[in-house]
Length: 339
Ligand SMILES: [Zn+2]
Image (cartoon, rainbow, N blue to C red; front, side, top):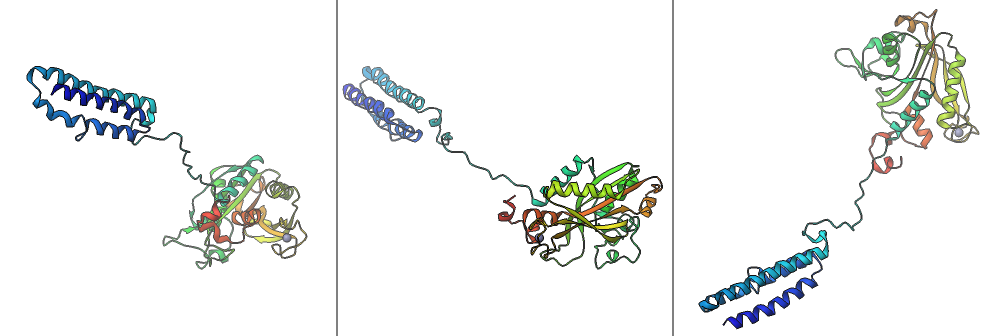
């Protein structure tokens, strides 16, 4: 009986060595283990024979059993070692697989333009100022010298709250806040969101971005304004761009001007975008109206300033050849991924 058992265990042991040596994955090692010492494993299956072994032979039979089980454990360890750490568990990470690529976000084109404008003006000595989007009538209109019947005050054009405050219609409010908070010299640009009641279409939206500039110091002239705008035009759109100023009217500046840049699409030759004029209307500007300075307790006899404001979306559309304003707020990845 003992000999029969030893013979069977010997055969199994030979199979154990073969099986584990051939295993080439963690799963195969696990299968081999189950095959020998699992609940229905071939070594386990011999256990009932122990009951039939004569008493004097039992120690030898038990020893042979233990040796067979130990062999399984030893071969299993060796196989795992041979396959490396990656085989030590079924859930292990295959380090040879290529990494998963996480999509990187891109900057929104409007943000990109704001950053670029701020960088250009910083190099000219301006600092960046910010203010709230909900404003008072005083900061948005009164202190900016807007006449009481100015159309932009109309509730048809502006979003008012019940308490009389409003969604700012321009970033000029930051100019007022800055001049109230600090004394000249002042040199700031203020980028931000503005709101107007408008029917959204390809070139109009209820909210849009502006960047405004304000420079208040002694002996500031129109020539300073013009050279600042020219420098900006060349930095933002390129060396070849020229500018021109046309007289205009704004309540907060005197004299006031519209500033055109030579068309960045056709180089001034005339095209569909510039309506064959060779020029693009880009911004409004002028010398700060002495009334505005008085409204913020700055003496216009001692200090002068210039101010300008332009639309970020318009700059972005021209720079990146974007035809529809609505693309900026539709969150379409096919559009946004291009930036
Ligand atoms: Zn053109």
